[in-house]
Image 1 (cartoon, one colour):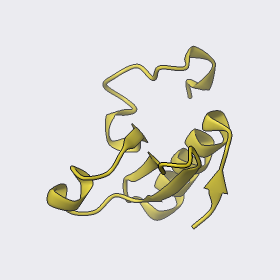
Image 2 (cartoon, rainbow, N blue to C red):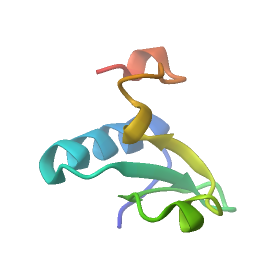
Image 3 (cartoon, rainbow, N blue to C red):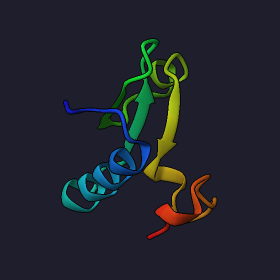
Image 4 (cartoon, rainbow, N blue to C red):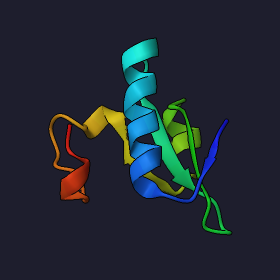
Length: 70
C-alpha cells in the first residue's frame, strides 16, 4: 500500500490499478491527512472508511477535480 499526500497522484494510481487488476480501487484518507489507495472490499467495511474517491463511480459521476478526468 502506497501513502500519498497529493490527491491527483492517488487518483491516477487508483485508475492505473483498476486498469491492471480489473478490480475497483478506492482512495481513503487517514486521520492524519495522508491518502492510501487500496482495492475496494465488502460494503460493511467500506462504509466505515473515509473514501475520497472510488473507481466504481469514475464513469458515471464526474470527479471533484476537473483536471483529473481521464
